Image 1 (cartoon, rainbow, N blue to C red):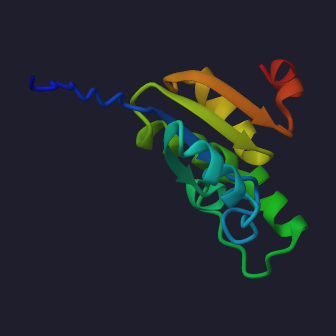
Image 2: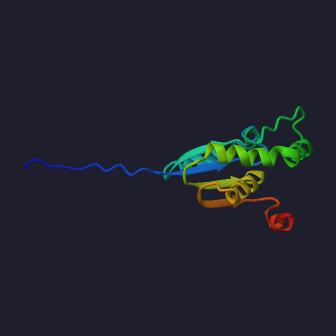
Image 3: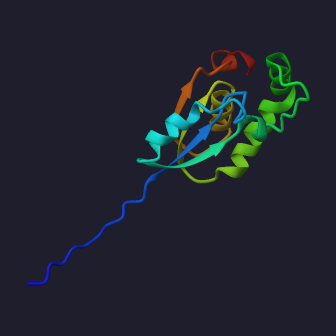
Length: 128
């Protein structure tokens, strides 16, 4: 008897991970998430500073916050929408969560959004 097996490869769903305001520079902790999640998802990572074109000569919390407030968040929202055109799940941290939330309001095709320590979302309705 010939044993016939069919191998069915199930495509993993896409998970887009957005860093917090510190980006990948201080993001070694994110590796622990990836180790677990890559079993279940095809992971794409975006550094929030790179998305927002945030480049500060002195990487202090105050300078980074100011750069995101001035135009970094808006740039990050725009760049994320340009980069991610297919439906995906999102896992985002801090400022990155704010970026994903704002991008979703502008049409980012998100299946789900998991926002950890999102900042400023609760005040979004007040700005409209």
